[in-house]
Length: 170
Image (cartoon, helix red, strand yellow):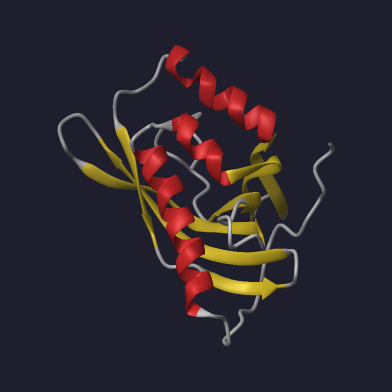
């Protein structure tokens, strides 16, 4: 099944959302971040639908347009995560700090949310520094009884220059 092209940037927010919905989404977002922090990559996939899309984008002031660092469907994300152990990598860690999600829009099928994100780099000596900031722009299926799953994640970064490259999803 070909992934649907959905909104990539959200604006506004809903004020009359059931707090349990925000809590359920927040738990999923925190679990995914925890799996990435602990490099339990296979577990991350449980929170994405099989037709999901994962993107990392930023707005380039020089080019005056959006730039995409990563744009993968579910199978591409699965392949990327499966291949990470085979890559030569820095032994340092990335740690994510996530704020509670804001619900931007809801309908009977989807929930659109924005979650502010900071990613810190911790080197082998224990020195920490800010690696990137931005937000998760997530679209969830509205199947809250069986647990929400992400249809699309766009990691919208404010950071455009990184101290070193990384092939890890953010």
